Image 1: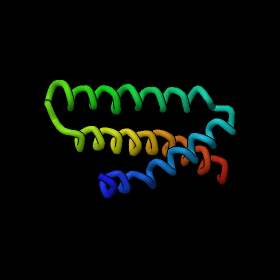
Image 2 (image 1 turned 120 degrees about the horizontal axis):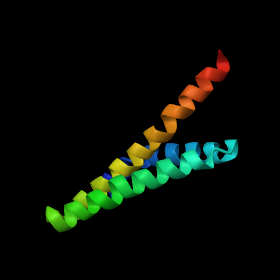
Image 3 (image 1 turned 120 degrees about the vertical axis):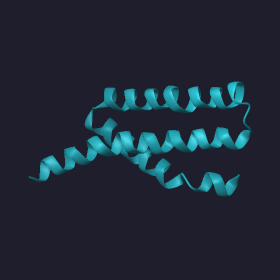
Image 4 (image 1 turned 60 degrees about the horizontal axis):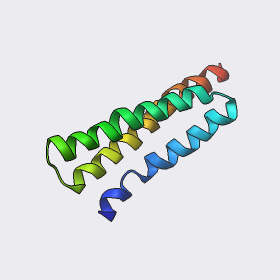
Length: 89
């Protein structure tokens, strides 16, 4: 399990840094919706489906966590990239 959890750590680090950037810019609403939507839409919903409906094991729950971290990193990175590139032009 530790090898499995080590894979999403860069995504988690990127997500934490970008979330802090959004809070620093005062865009807390954007950060809140990305965080809440990903948490409820991916982590909780798919964990429930994996455990209760599909009867999968703990590994599937960790995959849901990995997908949630990767999704949040992308949800934060795409608008941040547009903001940074827009400021340079």
